Image (cartoon, rainbow, N blue to C red; front, side):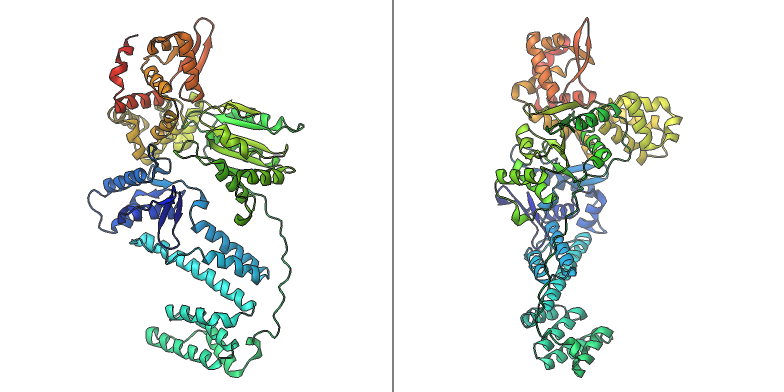
Length: 617
């Protein structure tokens, strides 16, 4: 999907306009889009929608609006939860920067400012005109803005005006003052008290040989300022008037247009796109050492090191990959690229879209990006052939999505995160990321809430880690709840969580910021129908560890078939291989949050009655 805020607020996707028609839905989404990739507190949404007089059920109304936005913006048969995510104190929209027209506009204005300062007004004029051409009217023109959106709209209009002033300055430097008169008159009429615009209009008229009109502009502005504000024009405007009256040659147009100096091709800075490292990152020493070793092992060969970090939702794959990438970034002085592939979302990025993201990251202008995937691949592989670049591909969907993105140079390296194994990706090494040990879970929890509190209640801390079953996302969720209830003891909060756990479904915890249900659901949806049914039946096994034989009895199948099904679920990161025992053979395990998800899924889909007889084995 793409979003437009420079004019009417529009949502474009699937070759059609998908803008919410309800005013409050449109306002809610507009605020989330303008603050994309950051958490918008629920209170901010309430303030925007109702100001200082919210209704009694404002929070419930916001939840309803979020639900409606997810439903209306999702593709048929897919949820919109991964686009619009719930966080502990509010909501966040996760979209690429390039999906919102404001961000390309900012980039073009920045480029125009830099080339104008470098003495190339011709190029600056071209770039700034492209930026201004993105506007289709006033900012958020079709949105009934509240206080917060009004501030955003004002800020956008100020950016537009600054870009226009820079383009006018470029026109002056190019001697185009004759062409500016009409445009500047319209701007001055729209802003009768703006001294900067009136000064430029006076100068354009004076240089066009229309001195009387230029001086009249000064007198008209002075009258407006005195009548409206009781102020005289500022010193710069008064100096300009005196220069015109005296015929000062310093304000005359240049006798001969200056030839713009040749553009200097400044070497672009290496891309540095890694997200910030996690402050409370804990453990994972063995996994980090293993991946670092695999990335370094190819240094003396022509093979490209590709490592896939695979694990269940919420286990910390992205945090681990980003932490490692920061640790080894010095090995890759030509840049670090980060590409979110959206494999867990209803509509993952295509290889062509991801390659466009990469090419923009290395400095290729949009107009120079080839239209075909093959052309984009060739351009990136040529660029990377003699460079040392680290490419982080986060949340991969399939080998077919990843293969075209691989760089061409043996000095590069690729680190991939995925929820399921990427069978068929040539040359890739897979590293499994499991849950935290009890000790690591305790360390993470201590970093979240402080050693003073954990030292006072060590047994309660151990219970928290056991309740989360070593899953970093769940431990972080519980830690944040305890930080919000700082005066209350860990044991007291733990008792309340256990009580709530028996009364509320896993999916309902998303309203508090634990979006684990949605993440697990994306894995479940990718299974075929038979494997889905087998997953739900296996979740009814009452033992923490179970064998393929016990799984076979649950499925009503032979042991070999059960083993195949279980390994499919292991590949999908929904079941773990727990251990190998000489007597009992291979053992499997459901993490407790995964089991809770499966049981809730059965209740929702009304599958439980058909498998209830498996409880007795």
